[in-house]
Image 1 (cartoon, rainbow, N blue to C red):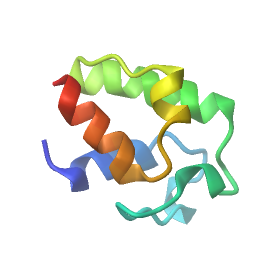
Image 2 (cartoon, helix red, strand yellow; image 1 turned 90 degrees about the vertical axis):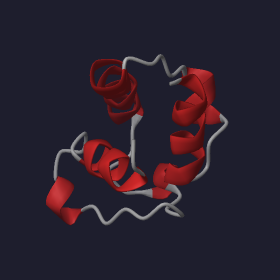
Image 3 (cartoon, rainbow, N blue to C red; image 1 turned 60 degrees about the horizontal axis):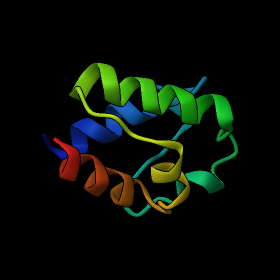
Image 4 (tube, rainbow, N blue to C red; image 1 turned 120 degrees about the vertical axis):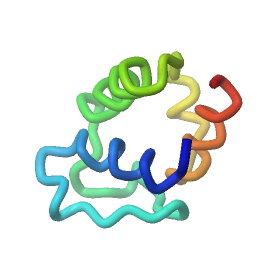
Length: 76
């Protein structure tokens, strides 16, 4: 699993992914499009794409895309 692939999958969960510029150091909760629906979509995407379970606490305890990626890596 590469972070670039994770970022693309993460980005695809937004309504307008083409308007979302994500880098590993992006503070995803500060994005205009971020909301609870996107958070749920991220949890579902991780389950479907990676067979891992992210929790609401995992998202709450993460600040950047890389933080979430590192949590995911530890679960795979």
